[in-house]
Length: 430
Image (cartoon, rainbow, N blue to C red; front, side, top):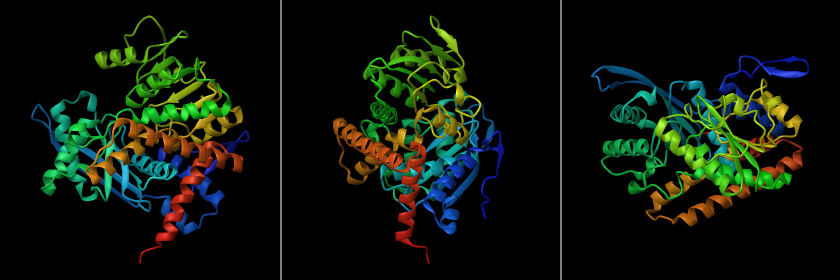
């Protein structure tokens, strides 16, 4: 039986001991389960993955050397439908992390009201020092190893950190070769030429922009001239920055994994993207003030978008944050201790399972189009995604108001309640 996470109390603040990212996810579940009065048996089901696979597989490198990599695929809960979740390539990928991300995907799909369960995958590797051919061989072998869990009606991967449309093309082709037919619906986030959807590349960033817009309206903040800082300048961070700038915001700070930039007068989102694509990082960028990725979180701004990795906003820095709104572009960027501090400070936090749901919503649209063999135009994709995001934001906001709770707590109550109801209706087999 999974033990509930132990805590100690120091100076009237509850401090989580030896917090792992999975313990953070379980702790969030605990709070919602206690509030909803969930049966202990149901809690035990939800607090651990339904299925998890660890694979160790060889890849021949360009040098001729064979290296063994470790990969994971975790399905948290499938009561709502097939598993859905990205695949990341990163040196810090662990089973603990993938478990947490799979759980958060369950809640994200439930908040958005789309018929998926939560899943996630990853490979522990150094993708930035690997050649394109090495990445292809790694992807095809990893896809083969986890193919027993994957399928359009079973579990549908998508891109995540250090993976992209090309990765998904290799993945889809590998599964298709195994099955002897083309299976476009086995992944989402594919290139348009093989069944991808318009609007998918910018979908998560667009969803972050919509969430920021709705949050700003809620607190009476005009977007025109609002100062924005973005930590993490990959796909999500860039599109969030660019689309918020189109709404009239001023981008005052950005950071990648190694360095950050600050300019009170504003930065050009597209110029920064071009520089990073050319040079690999912001390390040599001149003409602006330099900050560390952690210092960026504490910059004077109206809207802060943590769009890097989990565990960035903690008890150590939450009290130094000056933003009025935090919109979580990354998964799990804020710890429970930081959440409590931010709530007491009156900072509105739009949680990850709501704020960055635009990606999985448009992934759902891609899957639907693949199954129907009928494709939508860009306006329809964006309109349908905006409709779901605005509706979900309103539902979470209303529940937060009714419960006198934070948006994260409200989003968790809504998500967990929906998953529990699906489990109740389906029953326990046999």
